[in-house]
Length: 338
Image (cartoon, rainbow, N blue to C red):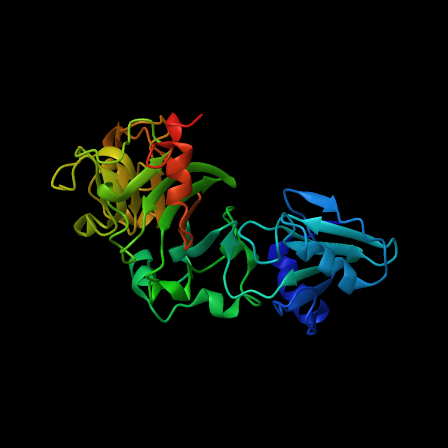
């Protein structure tokens, strides 16, 4: 039986969660948490070939498998299943199922493969609270990864759901000097619609978002080093717009041409600044993530944009540039890749 995680997550944590405190497997000393009566349903699940009632042996088998990030164990059937996602992976799906228990490494961060989630917002979230997108972005007291155990799972999902807050990692308060790349992604219905990757070396939490740092993009006419391309996290605050990717940062006119903008708060000025066609800022629910769905730049005032459900920002602390360069696609747009 699959239960809505928005309703069952606190129950599963409070009533059914125990900790396997002993060190398991290799000498890394990783501590695994056990969630009883539940199973992580990942993109990939596979048998680890360990048919034993010994849970520890199942976890050890997972740690020795490069694709395994958590274990679904069924005691009655002695099934030991490896999964491609852990409990606190970005977009992991937890379902309540009798007889199953999941073992996942205890975590202090949300990861999507090698990428660490540092910020997430979903459309209209600030209608339920006083904090707006800009204040959340700058709020160093907001440290979502300090309490992942009690955070609604929808707050680190590609789907818009029951998350009445912004996700902001503690890494935002102290931007790591080891950041190699930064990735901005827009999702609609859990499906990735926009992806842009930037060189994050030597950056801070805002300077990474610049045309000179662009590595790759899902837009076909967005190329690294393009002088007609202007990125800015805070470049149009006078119009309450953030994360703009436009041909100009001048907001004195409604002729705004480009690829992406985030409406951080209501601003009853241009057609695209309003949530509906009713000319009233009170109809606007922020934030809104507006993007070109044509694969190339548009005039936003023509209202040909699409609205995404979720914006997520990730950082990568590993240096893959040398490997990418050797493979011949470093600093090439995604559209040019095979």
